[in-house]
Length: 156
Image: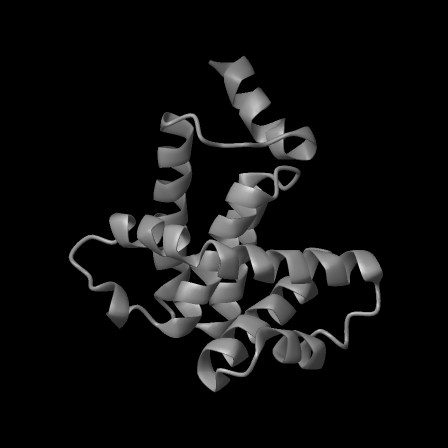
């Protein structure tokens, strides 16, 4: 079953890709490409997700760079980068979304839009980012976002 928010994530991916390629002002790109989203809650989620990526891109890109061994960041495909940025922004700045959901959605986007090796690459990078955030106790999750962490703690 496709995520209820997958369409919104796809639109966010389209906006960030168009913004990076065309270099138009982000407000124009958002207005043009998010027009299909008629539900205000979903529109706001897309807009907030895009803004979180752009506002924190340096930090997010540094987290990605630290996790890719023997590979230059400039050589990573644009869509792979954007998918990773979206997922990391969700993990960092959307406390109500479980990290597992963010990772699974990123893998599905990579399956839809990227090379055959991209889903494995995206999964590996995001798992490493998540494990590092857990280890450094920098994961801010609440509500539904805590579910898989509570379950793991109970199992241990």
